[in-house]
Image 1 (cartoon, rainbow, N blue to C red):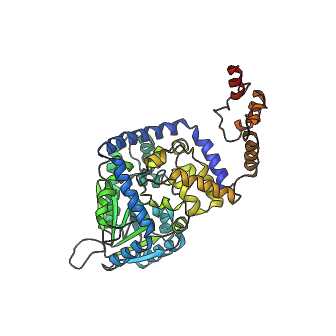
Image 2 (cartoon, rainbow, N blue to C red; image 1 turned 90 degrees about the horizontal axis):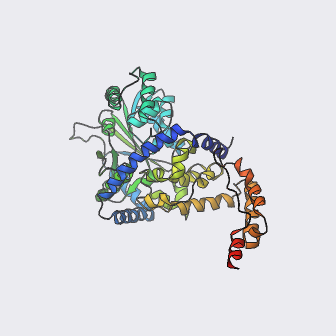
Image 3 (cartoon, one colour; image 1 turned 135 degrees about the horizontal axis):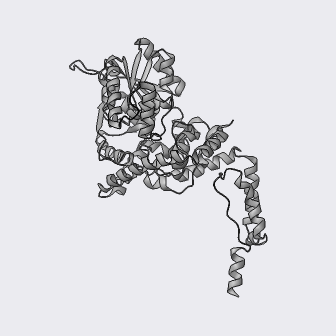
Amino acid sequence: MSQAHKFTHAANAIAFDEKHRDTIKFNISRYDTAVKAGMARYNNVEAAKARAAAIKRDVLAHWGEYLIQFEEKITARGVQVLWARDSAEATSYIEQILQENEAKLLVKSKSMTTEEIELNHTAEKMGCESVETDLGEFIVQVAGEKPYHIVTPAMHKSKGDIAKLFNEKFGTPIDSTPEEMTEYVRQVLRKKYTTAQVGVTGANFLIADIGGISVTENEGNGLMTTAFPKVHIVLAGIEKIIPEMRQLGLFYPLLAAHGTGQQMTAYNTIFTGPRQSNEVDGPEKMIVILLDNGRTAVYADDEGYESLACIRCGACLNGCPVYKTIGGYTYDTTYSGPIGSVLTPFLRGFRDFSHLSFASTLCGKCVEVCPVKIPLTDILLSNRRKAVEQNLRPAVEKQLMKGFRLISSKRIGFDIFPGYLKTAGTYPFNFIGWGPKRSMPTFANKSFSQQFKKKQK
């Protein structure tokens, strides 16, 4: 089954799952309330977004320069920087690091980039246990699932779902409260932190002028992940670079407000190297893997390149009516929602994933909420055009569009057919992707222009 058919099948299955819809509606409603309060703290949020957008466009104009500056600064403090062209190269680096350090356990803070290369699978193949330490990631890992959302990995689960899962896996009481389950996980993870040989983080921002890695999180698990293990691995996409440390004063509140509605994320840490000679804490080794994995292909596209400005706040997912209907798993990609629909065809190929760029109503909500003003709907349209130009759309669609153009190019095309024939012509859509709980509308016997002319007489 092709990726497009899998997508359609999964969307049809989940779109009318009322329990799923209720869970997502509840969780996103809480997000909406929090974000409303977060935005109210700004005197002029549009000015902040415009400034952030300008900085990220400057990054794209001088991308290579900032990355080289970052490498020079951080290697001066004993950090090894490795450049990975793709997932395979990043995976080979990690396998070598785990082997050299005889790692049997690694702890990992939340990172979509590690999901992109399936780091957990790589570690397990090497005989190394990989433990997610973010609570949401921990939950989906225990469930044998992948993150549902780039910010809220377990958004699709209610507290009852999680209590049932923990009861089955750990024997905790079926009526455990969220606080009790959190405390249970905290105790489990404390033992993992103190015995792990390797800690892995992503990077929210790579800071060029100081050679720093900025990690933001709300649970303290990122700090614990790097505090005890002797080796700290950072896996970061090369688009995460920003020019100056002082710009975090702009990006931290924007990311928090759009991601969770907070004024600031609870923990904001900047890592600049392994333990130095005059320090008593920290890892003995620090390795930064800078991942391309299709990003330069996005950069080479005159229309899609602006999507690399994304700071992974998740706002476009939470605002998207399609995402809220079909959920994160339907996309079958690391990055879902509008930003995933834009990026994935470049990262994983238009032949298999161009259909995602058609999974949008083009309502513009994603553009409205984006903190760095990415023109997502424009890029979605350009991706659609590319799919058509590469003959990746179904042949029947091409014929239908030709027929529609023929009929709609002149008013007589709509006037010549009576209403019952127009209605009959739409009948097949009840069976092709329209869904079992909806029906096509019935056309009036006379067109609008015919009715208008009659009234004018």
